[in-house]
Each structure stands twice: as C-alpha cells, then as structure tokens.
Image 1 (cartoon, rainbow, N blue to C red):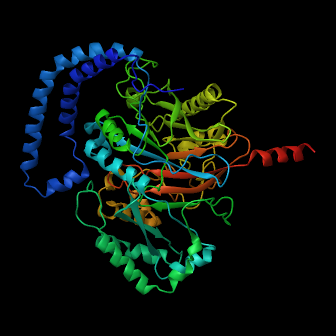
Image 2 (image 1 turned 120 degrees about the vertical axis):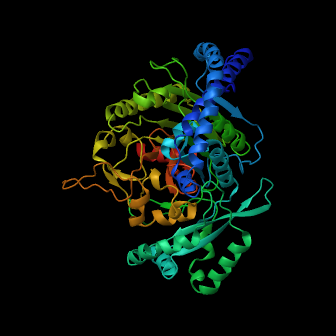
Image 3 (image 1 turned 90 degrees about the horizontal axis):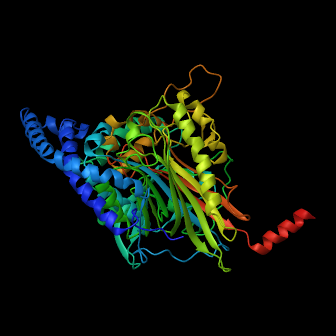
Amino acid sequence: MVLRESPFPNACVHDLHTAAWALIFPCFWSLDHMVASFKPTTYEQQQKQEQECYIWPMKVFFKFLMYLILLVISIPLALVGFIIWAPLQQVRRPFSFSHVKTPKVYLQEEWMGYGDGKGFSFVEANLCFLPNCLARFNNLSQTQRRAVQIAGHISDSVNRPRIQVCVDSPTSMTASLQSSPLTAVRQVSYSATGTEGSVLAVNNLHHIDSSEENSEVENVHEYLDECQSNKDPLDLTVVEENNMSSAMDEMQANQPSKQQAVSSSSLKCQGKPQKKQNGKDDLPAEISPLFPADVAFVCLLEVFEKRAAAKLKQLLQPVFGHILYDVGVYGFQGCCEFKFFNSGIFLASRYPIIDAKFHCFPRIRGEDGLAAKGLLCVKIQVGLTEKGQKIVGYLSCTHLHAIAEDCHIRQSQLSHIIVWINDFQSTSRSEEEKVVFDVLCGDFNFDNCSLEDQLEQQHQILQIYKDPCCSGPGQEKPGVIGTLLQQRTMYEDPVKSPESLQRALEIEELRKQYLEFPINPAVNSTEQRSVGGGRRIDYLLYREDTVAKGVITELEEFTFITQLAGLTDHLPIGMRLFISMVPEEDDASHDLADEL
C-alpha cells in the first residue's frame, strides 16, 4: 500500500482548504499573542525584575492595544474562512504524509533478517508545541524557536555513530570510577559523506557509589554553579573542541592506570548485545544528556501548532525520510465534540511507512475536548529477506486524557487502544511478511506509583505489553525516574542545561526539587510502592507474542534524555530493541524436535 501525501482527495480541495485557513489565521494569531502578553514565564519574570518598574506595564499595554486592533479587523475574514474550512474536514484524511526517496542520511544496508541481528532505537517526547498563549500556562514560550532547536538535536543524533562501552563485571566499573565518578566520553558527529564533523557535546557517564551520595549532595550546587552561565535557556549549548580536548588530556594525565581497566574489546559499535549478568528485574537504563545515536523512529506529542509542525517536518525530513504529521481530525469529523486542534502526534521514521490508520477517542471532556486525541497505528518495512519476504514492524502512538480525576476515561481509552491495535494488525498483516517488533508509546497521563492511578496501573494493556521500567503495579525498577518536570523550576541554574539536569536527576535529593512526584503516595500501607523516582507518565512498551515465529527480542538499553532542558516540561525517553531471527533451517529442526 502506498500512502497519499495530501490529506485531501484532490488538489482543488487542498487549495481551497489552504485559502480558508489563510483567512482564519490572522484572527487566531492576534488572539494568541494578545492573551500571551498577560502570561509571562518565570524566565521572563526574572528579566522583568532587571528592568525599570514602568517598562513592563507599558510593553503589555501597547502590545495588547495593537493585537486588539488586529483582532477586530480580522474577525470578519475569520468567519468567512471558518464557513469554508469546517465542511472541508468531512473529506479530509486524518493525517498528512511526507517522504523523500533519497534522504541525506542513508541506512547502512538493507536488513536481510538473518545473521547477527539488528537494533532499532525508538524515542518518545512530549514537546508542548501549543499556541503561544496556552504554552505559557506550562511555563514555556517561543514555540517556533523551540521547534528549530529540538529538530536540530534530533537530527544530530542520527548523524552521531553509536559507541557503547561494555564492562565485564560491575566491580571493574566501580574500581575504574571510584576516585572520579564523572567520566567524559568524546562523541564525534559525521556528515552524510562520512567525513568527521565538529564536536557537538560531551556525554557524561556518572556513577554514584552509595557511600559518596551524601558528599555529592553537599557539593553539587558548587559544581553546578561552576558549570552554569547566565545564558538564555533556549540558546544551544556548544562545546568547543579545544576545551574538550584539554579536558580529555587532563583526565588522561590524572588517571593513566585506570584507563587500562577498560580493554579495547569493551568498545563496540554494532553486533549482538553482550549478555548481561544482572537479575531479571534489572533495567539497562541511564540518564543521558544526548539523544541516543542512530535513532530510527521518533514519536513526538503535543505538536498542535501548525507552523511548529511544518518546521519540524522541514528540518527532520533530510534524515527521517518518512513523516506523518498533522495527525487527527478537525470539526465534527468522527467525533461528537467540535475539534479545533489535532491529536498532536508527529511520527518520523527512517524506514518506509507502508500503512497507517488513526482513531479518535470517543470520550473526552474539559479542555482536552478541543483536541482530537487518539491512537495512530503504523506499519513500517524495515527489511527484506533473501526470499523476498517483507520484514515489518508495528508502531502505535497515543496521548491519553489529561485530567487527573478522570481515571474512568483513561481506562476506556486503554481498552479502545487494545481493540484498535488488534484490528489494524489483523487487517494489514500478510502471511508472507515477517513481523519483528510491536511497540506502543505515548503520554499516558498516569504513573505507576500514585494511588489515584491504581485502576490504570492494573489495566490489561500493561499485561499485554511489556513495560521495561515496571516490575508490577505500583513497583518501579531500580534506576527509573520520572518524566514530568516541575514547571516552576525549569529555568533555574541547576537544570538549565542538559549536562546540569542530568547531574541533578542522578541525585535523589535534587530529583525531588525538579521532578513531579506521585500524587498521594501510599503511606502506612501494606502495599510497598516505590515513589523515589518521580512521576513517569511517558511510556515505551513492546510485546513479543505478536512477532513472527523465530524472532527474538532483547531490550538493549533504556534512556532518560535531558537534552531538551529548558525546551519542554517532559523528559524524552528512548528504548533500543535488538532483534534477531532464527534461520528457517534451525527453526524447522526445533519444531521437529518438539514434535518428537
């Protein structure tokens, strides 16, 4: 199946829709900026304190007057545009599709399925790309500028080679890091032609021994003050190559013997992940200041603003050849309530998307009723076997109801998700295809530790899909942290940059200052509940019972990403699955042995 790029059946309807939105936009823009002028972010309030007391009220007054005049002038045009725009939504497909045949960053080789296996990296992030006036209620602003910077960070991750450090035993890692808990690993980006580019950042791998944690807490503010500068939180952090080289030279001079503890065989860029000797409940998780290297699939949420979505598409298209954006319905199409915003889902893939379907949730109330939240199901081709069989995977993205007390609505939505995913896979699946992964991701708006979320925690979907961070209802695995930042502290110096936010989140006392924690955690209850990591409402789940026979799925790594510090109020998360396929001859021999 080949997806049509335009969401409309023909060019005439598409052009008419574009003209109608052009009439609506001036009114929308004026209203957005007029309301935004009265809602400063905490960063803007800090700037206001540095100005004369009369300057800020004057700015607000003249901005309000200008936007009010523009709003009054544009209202008649908006009404005409709305009369044209609303009926056209009945013939609109619920997503737009964009693809390029020759992206600037190529896949290394087409996967044949059998052999050493292949890893696929998934990233989920809630970006809060709302209209400016609404984003400010989440203490965020400058949506267009944030879109440009976030797209740059994601694109850089694709260009960066994946280098993994493996240590044979936990004791050797502890011994190598005892006197220096902060180890810098230099990562170099490569351009599309394969030549070495400029150094982008330093990836900090931080190990904290239990005996060192108290001293780390006492000295962390001194460390952060030295590392921080009073720059705009939206400015890109650039590490000069000469500074990083000098830091590496100094580290090598101070620790000549400890560098020998990690052998050259511990470094690897590809191949099957090393078998871990940890327990079954251990999670290969880390807090990283960078997006994972070689990202294959990116699911972005709350991309409601059309111009921000267009910039994301424009900047990500050279590296992610296949993009679904403007996902969702408008008007009364497919839903009972009027929808002025889409679902906010934005999906970018480096592999061809061969089928997609969107479902709108039927029961939504409150402010969520203006948005067409739902589920996007996608089928992706990731390879081709020697016999010509397609190797495919399924990826589903969603954003559940946000109002905390409406647990019954979220439960209903989770039940709809199970039905919709099964229906999509049953209708799009072919017996000649090899399914190698089935992933569900999104912002579920409930965590695994709050008492108010107990019903959602026990929902059937969390038994069907595996949650790498969860060992059971109310039980998080060690090393898991929350993904929801405290909005009022986002611009404070200790968390303004990716590196400082990573450092702060690795210490429990500082985590409590900058992350949202579970609602009504269990107190004096016989049920043990882990609440130390914060509210984890963003999920990356996978299941194995729907993949083809002979396919082995291994969780290679799970990442909490701090690279968007100051750009959103959520922590992005990443998951890498390593997929290997048993050759058909071995599979047949195993089946014969089982029968005997």
